[in-house]
Picture (cartoon, rainbow, N blue to C red):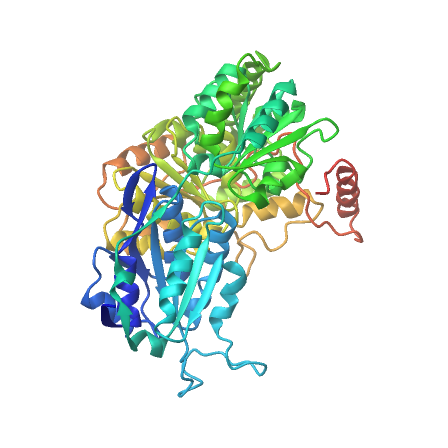
Amino acid sequence: MATVRLTTAQALIRFLNQQYICVDGKETPFVEGIFTVFGHGNVVGIGHSLEQDAGHLKVIQGKNEQGMALAAIAYSKQMLRQKIYAVTTSVGPGAANLAAAAGTALSNNIPVLFLPGDTFASRQPDPVLQQVEQEYSAAVTTNDALKPLSRYWDRITRPEQLMSSLIRAFEVMTDPGKAGPATVCIAQDVEGEAFDYDVKFFSRRVHYLDRKLPTARELEGATELIKASKKPVILVGGGAKYSEAREILMELSRKHQIPLVETQAGKATVEFTFANNLGGMGITGTLAANKAARQADLIIGIGTRYTDFATSSKTAFDFERAKFLNINVSRLQAYKLDAFQVVADARTTLEQLAPLLEGYTSEFGGIIGDLKEEWLSERERLSKVVFTREGFDPEVKNQFSQEILNEYADALGTELAQTTALIAINDTIPPDSIIIGSAGSLPGDLQRIWNPTVPNTYHLEYGYSCMGYEVSGTLGVKLAAPDKEVYSFVGDGSFLMLHSEFITAIQYNHKINILLFDNSGFGCINNLQMEQGGGSYFCEFRTHDNKILNIDYAKVAEGYGAKAYKANTVEELKAALVDAQKQTGSTLIEMKVLPKTMTEGYDCWWHVGVSEVSDKESIRDAYESKQEKLKIAKQY
């Protein structure tokens, strides 16, 4: 057996360079590069190895471990899970900073390789810098916190363990049914230890994403369900996008008059301009999609997890008559809502179903067009919201008094409504631009009123709704689509939470555009607390003397080296967008928007933990309302 003597870290880098993925007969490298913040536990092991020979791997210096990991996740998501960046961190706080990102990747089923350093396998210098200590075990390190947040987790305490561990990690990451984060922690002394590795370990290794075929039984059952239904609805989830099922979805929808509704992850699998696409469903959905779902007697879930936002906490459907057909590569997800399960690739399954559905037409017919037209009229209304000192024209629901709204208008120097700004952006930026969002009120507004006209241009992380993903994720998307304009839709709360990789984008000249909606607070959660009977409590950003906080975010961006704009009117916003497109470097457009100018819910309900006992009548009323909704909610 031929061998080569390498350190564990050198073997790791050499192995990463030889991993390929094959999708529909096309082979490409699976690992594009590696994000790093070098520190104690990875700088003299993995760091030295990258310095000596990184191979084809692109090395990017992050500014925050969570931020760079979120960028890596966004890259993989935009690449339809067919390519990844690895992420390496130091032993203690650096590894701990991966936790939120690991949860984000796990919730969204996104493959990413985490390579945190670890403490000494020999334990000779214990406790080392950044090492936590537990009385019940000397083997516990910070990295144990990543176990429940990883699809695969391992700790390397001997050089030869690397071989089986990496093969397992890549098996998990390249399996569509269980894709997620793989965490391989490497003890820092072991990173530098040498071993005589079998040279075959470093041969070109191809991981095949073979499309899982449906069985005859599954096809027969699915066909029977669809043909027996009168008003089926197709719920397009993220799995449909990753399977690249756009064409067959449109064909089946058009031919059989089956409306399409979307989850956040599935939106823009099929562009909104397709006649039968009724948009997002659920709590952040359109009135059209929610009305169609309520009428449906069969829900065909394509690659969806059926989260509470998509199902309106399991009240979106008429469970007395609606049946469920789930097509998903994950058996776990296929079982949701007691559905008939087809555990197979979405595109392949739909293609094989197509000839079996000949002669079938739903009873939706012209109802689809009527629902869509009704929603487009509502969207047009939302595009023209105007603030006055007496109220809004047209009227919008809000829990603030007019006095407080006037205070915000004066303090922020704006009368701009969030919905008006969003639709103006949708009308102005290039159609093939990619938009990115994650947390706050913006995902709800975007799923409802953002109309993508080009597929795969809508990138929302809403499995975890991780604040800070917006800016970090935009860098990852830019790495995946360097020739596209990319736009981060971020509230001031999320921007303050994390925007470290804005600096990384500027540093490496990866142009990203930040659209910062500043309403001086955590507006989404403020809405939630007030809608459930509470007051406005610690969600507004106010100073010690109760003045509304007014931060000059444009000046912050200029300090980083970005081109910055301030836009508090539609005219200023459109002008800024046009000029930003001309720039070669990163930009930030600061918009002061009034609170309570987001979209409302449309025929939906969200189950949250309202207090059963309270001295406030409004909270008691909210609790009683919740109990009534639970009477129609599905429990499984």
